[in-house]
Each structure stands twice: as structure tokens, then as C-alpha cells.
Image 1 (cartoon, protein in one colour):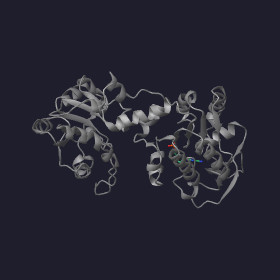
Image 2 (image 1 turned 30 degrees about the vertical axis):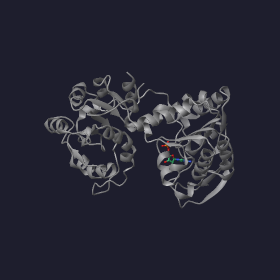
Image 3 (image 1 turned 90 degrees about the vertical axis):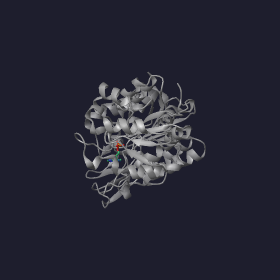
Image 4 (image 1 turned 180 degrees about the vertical axis):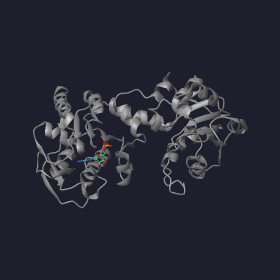
Length: 396
Ligand code: AMP
């Protein structure tokens, strides 16, 4: 399959699906331009070749039609600043203004269409909308990994109208390469660390990755469903009673696939779900009634670190404690430190899905791991082995 570097965009008008769903303050100013900067290399490639760029993105969740607070006019100054170039905004994704502005667009210029989700047909994957949008440009690039698991007009249906003039942008291609480095790794041992709240939201990932990994580290709230299934005392810890059999099956499957399963052995227990709670350390399977496990303990930190330092390929999804409360963030920080050290020693580490990217950013690990995924849901679905509509459309 051709990559973006196989094309020259001279004199082309290139529709680029980006994910500029950026955070804003109460005055609608952009507070973090990371997502804009993430697609800058793709946009610059087109401009430097002598092409023109037509950006397409959604912002927030508008209900129906135009709503000023979701208008891209509010983020245009930040987009312009991040890209170091003027950006014009069309008043809709189709219609007279979009047609006129795209027709007048010159090489080196950037046009941004209004919020994709002002048209409900976008979410419905409407063919007619795709046909109309396709008239605006002569090449289609998808660089939005965060929405690649959606079957929307801009993320997948549009691709059909550019049979020989479409490709992934650098960001999306980079995400797919990073996932492949985990799921198709021949650099062993391969270790997956799964934390977070519930077994139920991670079980499909576990089933998909078990044949591909050597070690599975489990932490976070999920721990207690496993410990209870094994007959341990978990006090008031988070347990999914209806998933005890699932936990037993995972333990059995680990044996079948010869995967080393590492569950916490000790933990920090609290007398309430609060940063100010009383705490002490107990074995993970001897939690007194009225207490709940909210972080892994020091012995567990050591065991997890040892496994991680011996690994050559590392996947990390989900915190091993309630890291939002500083008193229960220590285990997740220790884990991040071990992954950073393994990475320094040559391992490939991918962090992604849900809360993990936020944690990595908050605690300054972004540059110490190999790759931080930008797409929560899309990353999870990839790890579950699902084919993403945005990827499938490009390959068709
Ligand atoms: P997820 O979105 O499934 O990755 O879950 C992330 C959430 O799991 C975070 O908000 C953590 O606070 C939470 N979490 C981690 N450890 C625990 C625990 N021991 N008990 C309850 N929640 C936890």
C-alpha cells in the first residue's frame, strides 16, 4: 500500500481528516494544541509539495446543526498559530461558501471546513454528503486515528470517492505501525500491562493478545475480580461478581498459552474512596472488611518492575491504582518508571487507550516511552483485533 511519501501533492487540493477535537477554556480558547501539532507533519508535507490543504475535523458533540460554541472559528487562531500559517474557515462542510472557498484556494493555502458534526449526515455515513464533499478536493488523506473506529463520512465513506488518490497521514500511519509492533512483534519477551477499573472492558483485549504475548501483568480495580475468583478476601474493593468465571477462564488460558500471569501480591488499602482515607499495606488476598484496595503495594512494584525490565516489547493500557488521587498514584508512577527504563535499554513501549495517555502526560513520561497513542477507543478496538472502518476504507 502506498504511503504519503509516495505522492507529490503539487497543485492538488487535499482534503485532510484531522482530529482537532481540542480542549477549550470557558472563553473557547484552545488550552492544549497537542492534537493540532500531531497532524502538522502531514499538513506541511502537502503544503511543501505545492498543494493546498482543506482540513476537516469535528469539535465536541453539537446536537443538531450550527451551535456557536462548537464553531471552528474559535479554534482557527490556535490552528493558525500551531501551523504557522493563515487559516480560512468555510461556514459549513458543503454548500456555496465551502465550494467557493475551496475553488479559490491556491497552492500553499489552508482552508478549514466548519465542524463536521453540524451535519448529522456525517455521523450516519451518508453517501450523498460524501459525494458532495468529494467535490471540494482531488485527494483524500485520513490522519485522524482518534476517530478511525467510526464509520462516518469523513473517516471512511469519503475514501470511496478517491479510489487512486487517498492515503493515511503520518500520524495515522504511525499509530498503525506502533500497534503492529506489539501485535506482530518478534522481539520477545512481549509483556502486556493491563490496568484500569474493570475486567469487563478489557476482556476482549486479553483474549486477542494472549496468543501473542509472553507476560500479562494485571493491576488496578480489575485485580480484585481475579483475587476473589481465586478465593481471596478483597474487603470492599471493586469486584465484578458476574465476571468471576471470566477471571478464572483468563487464568486457565494463560496456562494454555504459556503466558506468565502477574497479579499484585500486596496493595495499599483505604477505609474510604478518598485521598484523605486512612491507609495501610496488606497482602492482596487478605483485605479486611470495610477496606478497599486502591493501589498496588511495594512488593508488587518490585515484581512488576523486574518483569518489565526483562521485556523487549511492552504494551501498557490502564493505571494500576486510582492515580487521580495522589496518595494512590505511586504504583502507577513506579510502573511508568520501569517502562521508561526498559525503553532506555532498547525495548519498544506503546502506551495507549483510555486514561493511560493522560497519566503519561501528567507525570512527564511522554518522551520516555516509545509511542503514546492519540486514540483511546480506536487503540482499544485495534487491540481487540477489530478492523477499524477508517483503515478498512483506505485499504479497499
Ligand atoms: P480504564 O478506563 O478502564 O482504564 O480505568 C481507569 C480507571 O481505573 C481510573 O480512573 C482509575 O482511578 C481506576 N482504578 C484504578 N485502580 C483502581 C482500583 N484499585 N479501584 C478502583 N478503581 C481503580
